[in-house]
Structures are given as structure tokens and as C-alpha cells.
Amino acid sequence: MSFDQQVTITCDPHRGFVEFPQDPRLAGFDPDDRKFVAVAVASGTEQTELVNAVDSDYSLHRTPLEERGIRVKELCPQVIRRVR
Image 1 (cartoon, helix red, strand yellow):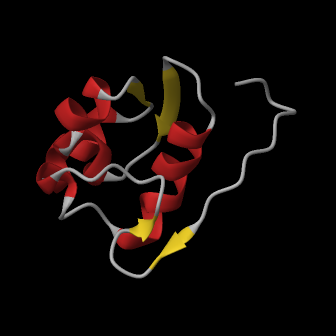
Image 2 (cartoon, helix red, strand yellow):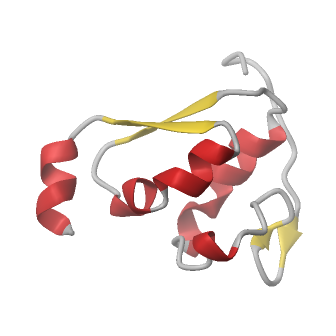
């Protein structure tokens, strides 16, 4: 996805967004952060990188995200380890 690309995501009353993966392993993913995953999925690219500073959800759900081509770049992994 280029930085000037715009994508549309669709609200869903159960998953937050239609584009958010239907995977039981992601059921505990923070509803407020699902929009970022939905945008990554909606971009249509095979590999997308999300940049994360200190939110533990991304590292806790790394495997199901990576299986969908969403890589997570952790900026402060030492902080996330302490939060867990």
C-alpha cells in the first residue's frame, strides 16, 4: 500500500469491521485497534507492515496476523515484554 492510497472499511456490529479477519484467535484483539488491521486487510496487498510502539495486542496476536500477511514492526519490544 502506498501512503497516498485510501481504502474503505465497513462497520460490523460483531467483529468491529467486515474486513477484520474472522479468526477465533483474534477474538480478544482490542476492538479500538481493529480498524488498523481492517485497513491493512482492505489494502489488498499480500504483505502489509503495521508499526506498533507499546500495544501488546499486536505481539500477542502475531501468528494469526502474520498468517494473513500482516507483519508487525515493534518499535519498543522491551516495553511490551514488561507489560505482559
